[in-house]
Image 1 (cartoon, rainbow, N blue to C red):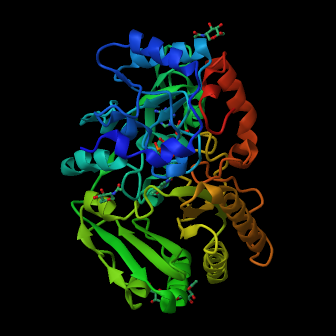
Image 2: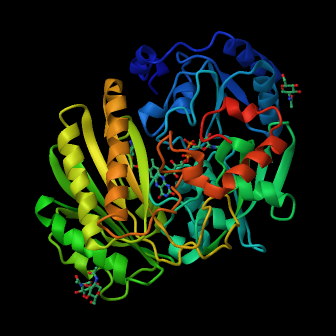
Length: 488
Ligand SMILES: Cc1cc2nc3c(=O)[nH]c(=O)nc-3n(C[C@H](O)[C@H](O)[C@H](O)COP(=O)(O)OP(=O)(O)OC[C@H]3O[C@@H](n4cnc5c(N)ncnc54)[C@H](O)[C@@H]3O)c2cc1C
Ligand SMILES: *[C@@H]1O[C@H](CO)[C@@H](O)[C@H](O)[C@H]1NC(C)=O
Ligand SMILES: *[C@@H]1O[C@H](CO)[C@@H](O)[C@H](O)[C@H]1NC(C)=O
Ligand SMILES: *[C@@H]1O[C@H](CO)[C@@H](O)[C@H](O)[C@H]1NC(C)=O
Ligand SMILES: *[C@@H]1O[C@H](CO)[C@@H](O)[C@H](O)[C@H]1NC(C)=O
């Protein structure tokens, strides 16, 4: 294993120095924790824990903390919260580290990495599974799939359970079973006051509701109890890539699928990438069974591709083979627009955005520009009752979250890239609501795709007041405000 020293020279030079009094909090924590948990206070330590603890999918989401903590018990987490509250030390809670927003799961103070909450315990009687908040979905699938069970989780490799589930959760299974929040049965939570509770519809319905979309505002989650469903032995799907000359054909196929395919087991993501000066498409196909019914995917399969690995395979194989880390370690940011539908004019407009922003930004530090078109059935939000979770704040229409993602190399380009992704989202919104004729004015934005300065109202709409009230009850000293994120 490489000493941490070799992994972080860039970080050491580009980040602000850690807070002086955070060192005091770190030593108090080290003193107070049980043997099951550990504190790492230097990037130079050779075990490798420190760099792993702070690392993120997007390097711009990583900061240099005073120390990292790997708590293993709820009691130790309560102790950490007591100390950061008493010392008013900024802290972070990191699950899978896949946020594309700086400071949401990083800090210059006390960095909590949740890895040690790693259980996956399936209960045959209830058909529910208890899942540790430090896991990524790949691990959960690997345990459940051999039992013939599955959960509603991430679509590509490496995404954390916790942030995904606490923000909403759009899955390959969403057309059949809803969002991940719709499948949560209970949440084990360490409250900012130190109390450890299992929150459910029965125990505290308001807090349960708030946690389903409310991220780290209410404390630190340690375990989720999730509903499972039966998993066929194989699914079908994979990745097809297409080059520039076939972009229009794939756009038509995407619009056709979006308008015409009603089988809830079928799903696609059409990703327009601008990379190395040219537009191309990464097309993911999914069917929840070993062979899709004839016709559903024909319009994609008939187009000449550059590469394809579509086949019958396990869920684990499908998810882990998706190259979610092709931009791993670069800076990254997401933004989003919620749309009504994906007719061909809308999808073409999105493709044109990838092309035009890509051409403009590549002169600067723009290396990778992508737009994920993610059609779901109009019924996909109807698997849970209106008002059953903080996100989505309305289920009246099955609105569709478009994901914009830019990756780049130098922190000097940050502000230009942030401006470009804000502007592109605005242009897509303007086109959709204008010429596109889409009635999207009342649609909320998906918090897991929204750039950091979107307002609470844009994400949670009419729920903001109630979410703030519940925050004041559960976190009377506003301890969780010391951690980053969308804050109530
Ligand atoms: C490659 C990639 C693919 C993605 N695919 C999808 C997809 O298919 N569908 C989808 O809906 N989203 C997807 N996302 C978005 C994803 O849902 C968010 O990035 C999500 O927040 C990731 O969760 P995490 O635990 O990895 O993130 P982290 O960065 O660790 O955390 C995100 C937020 O959650 C908070 N948090 C984490 N753990 C806890 C905890 N235990 N208690 C309280 N708060 C906590 C953090 O403090 C932070 O504010 C994808 C993202 C990436 C980068
Ligand atoms: C948090 O800090 C405040 C102010 O310093 C203090 O009054 C309060 O008791 C602390 N809360 C807990 C749960 O320790
Ligand atoms: C949907 O299918 C119908 C019938 O085959 C076809 O006329 C229509 O063009 C399709 N929609 C799109 C967007 O391709
Ligand atoms: C839509 O897709 C189906 C196959 O799924 C195909 O038969 C049909 O011709 C396509 N229609 C258009 C307009 O592309
Ligand atoms: C990217 O994913 C592949 C396949 O899972 C893995 O082997 C590789 O180590 C990953 N790279 C990084 C930088 O995470």
